[in-house]
Length: 185
Ligand code: HEC
Ligand code: HEC
Ligand code: HEC
Ligand code: HEC
Image (tube, rainbow, N blue to C red):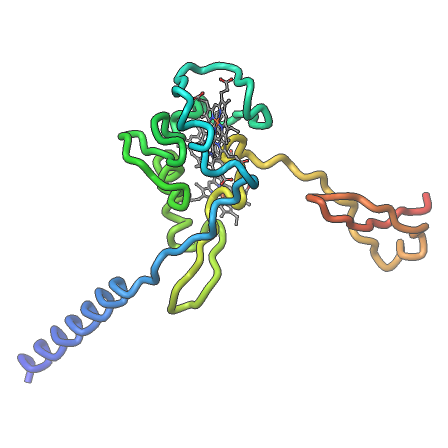
């Protein structure tokens, strides 16, 4: 009797373990959004193929809209000097822009892990099917990734203050126009 119980328990454990293993095998395929390039900038080799790369850290006379504020990174830590249409890892492996999370993940390992399992960032799709992951650069500017602090809006009016609202004033936040109350002093 006792022996049979042990066998049954072992069998149950085996079935559970097999279930976990197959659930892992069935992880959804990782598809991402396309990198949000400015129109006309890609392929980079349209210009760079005929330009010798310049590895020197300097003030550029082109791409002047890029203000690099990202640790002490320089352009060619991420962009490949020989193939400008690609990024690269620290070991030199070429990475297409669609997989740029691998480049970011080298230095932001914890966030990368969270992103993969859906805790950081955003993904859309089916709970048990294909999912589309938002790339890091859909939210972060890779050149100046720190978010600027937002200006806090005034607190909403409570029941007692509602009568004191004179009107509303428009404020623009992230290109959206919001109307906030203006109080009678
Ligand atoms: C931390 C990695 C990293 C560094 C450092 C970096 N870049 Fe980038 N860069 C990227 C990624 C990732 C993209 C793709 C972003 C996108 O699709 O919008 C990008 C996009 C670009 C683009 C296309 C921008 C656009 O408008 O679509 C240009 C041009 C560029 N980088 C040039 C530079 C130059 C010049 C430097 C140095 C001054 C630099 N990058 C430093 C990662 C980096
Ligand atoms: C319209 C032409 C043009 C396109 C398209 C272009 N670049 Fe450039 N890029 C330049 C010029 C010109 C310079 C040199 C500026 C200087 O030396 O002051 C430069 C310099 C750079 C540099 C500094 C290192 C070096 O080799 O001089 C990086 C990094 C860079 N570009 C990345 C990119 C990336 C990434 C893209 C595509 C997303 C891109 N560029 C697309 C014209 C272009
Ligand atoms: C070579 C290492 C390296 C790579 C590659 C790299 N980063 Fe960073 N990142 C840093 C450092 C260093 C800082 C600055 C940390 C600080 O100031 O606290 C930073 C800061 C940031 C921040 C701001 C964190 C804050 O304090 O708010 C974000 C967001 C970020 N990186 C995103 C990215 C993304 C997205 C990529 C890929 C395109 C990337 N990083 C690639 C090293 C790296
Ligand atoms: C859907 C938008 C979104 C995507 C996608 C996203 N992030 Fe973030 N990330 C954020 C926001 C919002 C914050 C700020 C959270 C805060 O300040 O509390 C943040 C914070 C960070 C920070 C600073 C964390 C800290 O502890 O201060 C880093 C580093 C970072 N992200 C890297 C990445 C990397 C790398 C990827 C891609 C693998 C990525 N993010 C994808 C929205 C995003």
